[in-house]
Length: 249
Length: 248
Ligand SMILES: Nc1ncnc2c1ncn2[C@@H]1O[C@H](COP(=O)(O)OP(=O)(O)OP(=O)(O)O)[C@@H](O)[C@H]1O
Ligand SMILES: [Mg+2]
Image (tube, rainbow over all chains, first blue to last red; front, side):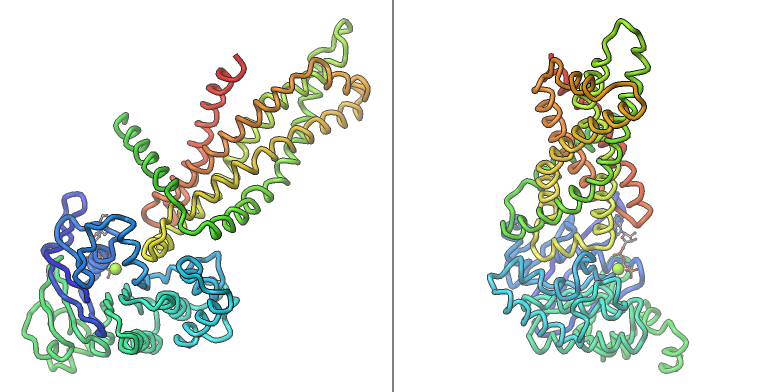
């Protein structure tokens, strides 16, 4: 479980996040949604500690994370997996080596065990026969799936995904979304996903937080969204012609 | 302006502090160091050889044409070539060339990793990215570059000899006499010490510029240019400093 309290963050005096609090439960796919530029990535980076929040606290299972020393943070970080917006695979390593990398760094497994674990993770995300290809030799959707495999290699307790399906076609997006949701439930992970894709929201959002102009504007489940009368949320959710027609606006 | 310079220097010192913190896993660092030696050292052998050969040749010819005086013995050509190569060329000039080749390579590699979030990916795993990426490069170049200097000395002197004999400005015997005449072995040590410093300058400054890139590929290009310019300036500065310290 992850709890955040009153997170605020400014860049050069410009407030990007103000006073955001929320809890994210174990075994659930928690979505952070909002317009481009609303501060989703900044929020996620504050939670994982890649950025330092100006104010507020981040708790991982009741441990106050953002005030820990680098060495103490390291212990929690080894329980985190993250899928970056551009996959962020190491381009000097093959697919297989990418997935084995966290195992190399943090376990004392034998080579065979590492290989077996890497193959298991790759199979879990349906990457077969690509072990020796390099990141620039595989498609965008495959990169994201390999990045998920790398993120789950160490059996993380917390999984973070920044726009897992940006730049992917609708069908591949659905595959990735469900992969994330299935893994979350299968391994009882606390998962946070940044997205502005309404398909994802309606498909996998156990809990949805809507960020508007750097504030938490609305929170609920995907089913609550359709009935919500929050103006800004409705404008965001029903911004396309298609969704407007469905809602009858 | 001055404030900015101090700020940048402070940032550089903090960066070095992060680089020199305890390695996560020795075995992996060792492996990385080997890989970097191959990439930053072995792959520079070609360029160092070619440049050293031609520079040795040119230095010989220039020395020869400058002392076209019947009263000066021709073994001085060998002496002149030797001293130019040992004192300046195979350390400082090779250092500047490596700043261009290796420096831009390091800055763009690390810069690309920064903008494509690969560095964030390392950090999120709990890895000290600065140390993991940079320490092996520093060790690899500080160990390997002195060999490049020695290679450059040998090839430069051979280059001078072959062109000198080919054009007839000096005979083999005279050239060899010159090379051995009043030879100061410390010049070699001096050149090697300089090169070790230059290796440190090139790798740390270039890594620093790559590591602090923000934005996209345009910034990576700029960082790589800055890395080469700053490494070169500091090489020249330290050349002055070390020469004063070691030879005075
Ligand atoms: N390092 C930074 N320095 C200055 N401003 C920043 C920095 N990072 C983000 N910002 C600003 O913070 C705001 C929020 O950015 P953020 O990347 O969180 O948006 P986002 O919601 O993730 O958008 P998108 O959906 O397009 O990814 C933007 O206005 C951006 O300009
Ligand atoms: Mg974003």
